[in-house]
Image 1: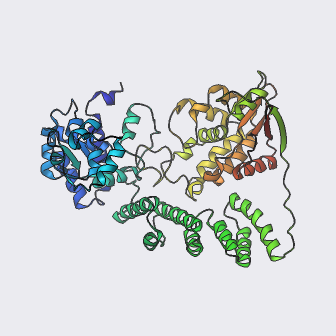
Image 2 (image 1 turned 180 degrees about the vertical axis):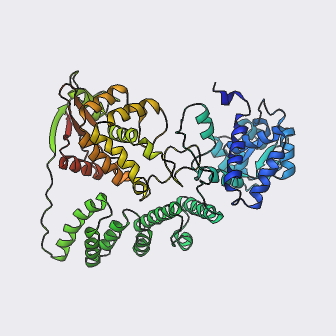
Image 3 (image 1 turned 45 degrees about the vertical axis):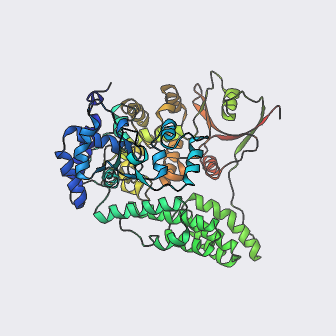
Length: 543
């Protein structure tokens, strides 16, 4: 067992670590309730601290005392008493019938209500029809010697967790996974001033967006939600990116609900990738080809990325036809080689990609299933120092698998000199040494680019021997141009001829499958840069 987990209070030690981190970095952002909680928590007896943390780290907010048995804590009710006195947990919460059912076994339900046929859900449905009023556990189940505790601190603890992680999708299990060695993180020097939230208003704004998204995903009516949408830009770029993404997603929902006016307004306001194309398509649906064409022309003059340019290349000819305008000259495209195969259907669970891999694989010409993993990993290994550079706002806790601004528009610009120095090694031949040394030194550390499980030394050495540096550099520059879009869509297979020092990429398409847009963009890029790539279309012999 790792040393960190040998102490039975390891989880409590981790919680104190969070509180110390927050006190050092966020003391000016804490409200009175949070400051009081931290001070009172530190003054509690250790068993009471441990019991509270156990409850905070478990799912839900209702717990039976009999289910809170921990050897290191001792007698549960004794440990709970100071928490009850502070009002942090309620020892006699009033429970709705649905809440009660979540706490009882089938046998206990029989003891409370008598034997009723059916499954637990069916019994609940039948009892709900009787409209039982809410009551305390002891009143629901007088024969039980157990009690139920309700945790009253989840909002406070969630805010503290948000301050530490900068998000609400990471939770306390990060510590345990790191202690167990399941997740290992790069050690980045985090400045004492580094934090995700600059002021209290930032924290409240994040929570406002989070609560709005929860209501939206729960299906609350748009009539109630739309007036509360945050339409104004936020000065914190990281938070504003979340706001813009939310507006875009709500715009898509409005479009699906035939609320075209609302969709147009939201797309126009959000300035999010893809929003301009959506506006054009909404205008088309509203039978406004003139407005759609004008916006498409504006976008074509300065597309925000390759994806937008690709969509516009399809939209503009259609709009020209609708408006009776002459065709634009076609854009020349480099051809991509095609392979057509008829193969025996492979046994389950082999995929079509693995069937093609086995068909082409030879000892002297090995084939690997790599998809997006190989080029991303080579890039991540070569540019490790640039990716994990301790810039302001990039890292603000020890559990980042990559910089917080990875998908921000200025990610590359903020590190331009560092990336330039990394890619320059491809011109001098030093890149092989750097990639090998990083592969050895950083083995297993979390990275937004490196797929350790897919990159053994055999594949790494074959790639370094057979992939030309100039082609690697072109691919890495394309990754940096649009990380979100371009780190996906790469061909499925790679075949090496180590004795000749050459290779080819193979994109595999099974029966009825077609090339996705991001795959088409990578294929065109490869053809333009002389990167050997082929698309293999497979039919089954028994079809």
